[in-house]
Length: 158
Image (tube, rainbow, N blue to C red; front, side, top):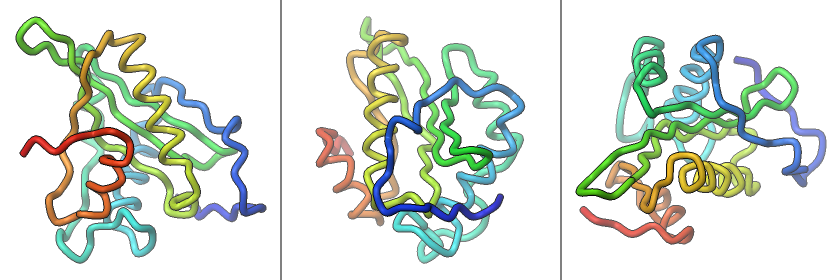
């Protein structure tokens, strides 16, 4: 995966719209997730608490093949800038959505792109998956990541 070199400090968010991923995107998604969580840069990396790859191509492919589940991607030219996974879950007569594999390229972190992508994913979850709640898992040793989601209205449940 090549490294992005943003030309300006501000991001034109209109250039970052989520599109449903296809199987052709699986390699890029896998590479981005590993770069985001196991790379050397970015505030989302977990190399200080967890070793090895975060995911592999088989896991991404299997997740994409699940019914009622989709990956969404946003490219800037040829660079995968962000990806996110949404899966519909039914629990006690309620529709929930699960978010996973949320990744923003380290070159775009800390500039508002994550908030922008998350907001789009939440809209998709409500409108297309008819979700009334959204849940995710976050490594407990990542208080800054938990705080990011709490600032967006998410609550810790355990």
